[in-house]
Image (cartoon, rainbow over all chains, first blue to last red; front, side, top):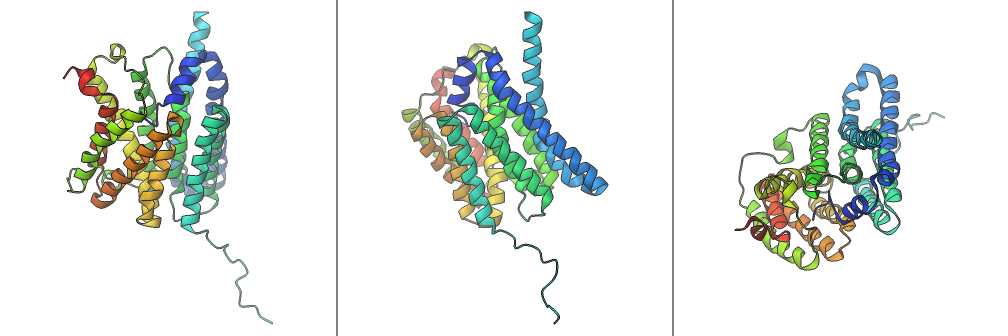
Length: 83
Length: 258
């Protein structure tokens, strides 16, 4: 009973092979990360040093998404090595 | 003729209540799409909200720290991308809760908020007792309408580490995010109505529990915890109340053999 791990999370992760989950939901998380990194770099180039403080807000989203990227890609690599 | 109108007049700022109500409506829609359409589409809407908020943060200076509002959609993305199927469910709470705590810390740093600004302070206020007292009855009510997933303590290192996980990686991040940060943004703009809007957002994040009764109960919990935090400026009571609510739903005394 949590908004972090809920009924839908349980059904999705336990009800499907991880390959299916990682190639749909996992890829979506990675695409979101890439989109934000591109926007971050574009803003960095435009604003320069003056925009550094405002750029910091991106880290609150991109750092956790990088952790998610590590989990998704790490598990896929492990799965490939096992096979 | 000389015009008195400025040539580069700034477009009128959209009212804060409209912006925040639209934001909550979008998150509710994203959660509904996640449940009633499919998860990928729902997460796409959540991702769209995150990108839109961050772009707006840069394109136009706003009095509202909109970037903080990107955290609830991020929580939903993480709740589907972080769990590892080989690990027990109790470990999933750590996997999702940890990056949420990291996100909250980085957002606080970026907005210039310190621990007391989000209600993390060593002070007790009488109104916090309301939040603590509400935890058990709300948890009992939740246990009547929702059957929580079975806890497998074998992978959690025993019962007490599991209690620690619930406190540090469920109650703390949810209260810090929803009451400490998002409600603060709402209340700064809307005063008392901010607590109500925060409770609606909190309840909406429970739509994927697939239990309408639980959504209503969590809405009431959001109101009670939100009121206590608004009154005391402290998150301690809300975190304790939230932890008691979790303990009641999972019938932790039985699990712990007390």
